[in-house]
Image (cartoon, rainbow, N blue to C red; front, top):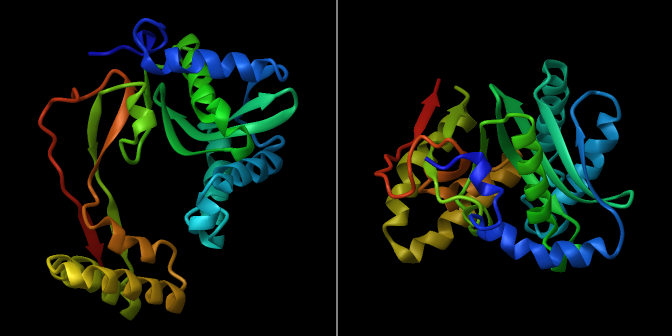
Length: 257
């Protein structure tokens, strides 16, 4: 089992080696520091800056950023407020002098860190700001005795530079018992799988769900068609449940009232 401490040794971590030069070059522009906002004090400003960074590189243009959907923005705002009250919130920023240039929305619970949303200022993309921030967060976590950092969501390439340990990831869909909810449930779990079997109909399913999203303003409805295989394996840094080469069971759960 890979320990969090192992990720921080330059001889063990591909990411640490790759970050040495960009970190040095960025450091020549000013002082680099890690800022963590964990309380309600200055939370509104931290969320505003964080949401801007989260969507700045490409998510705003793709329509998948937090700021792109009022309901999504409200969800992450309320989550941050309630997590701050319970001591779970960790909004992490990489700062160059006094400028926030990268962001990571973490929750800390049971001595573990969970990454919900990362982002960065694209004008600093040549310096790998998100990876530099991740390095600082891991070092801070290790220093505070955190036993695991779970990157959540998909096993993206940048995550696998830090760890090869994966675990199952399940999406839970909850549909209201109204007409719209029942229709979405039928489309997602009945119609879409059948359409996916025909290549020529794959574009039609995306268009159909885009129309549903526009009609009912349901956040993420357009993404359902793009995630027919919704079970992912998430990368974890620390004490994993499964190693990367272990068999991984997949599945999904839906609830329709």
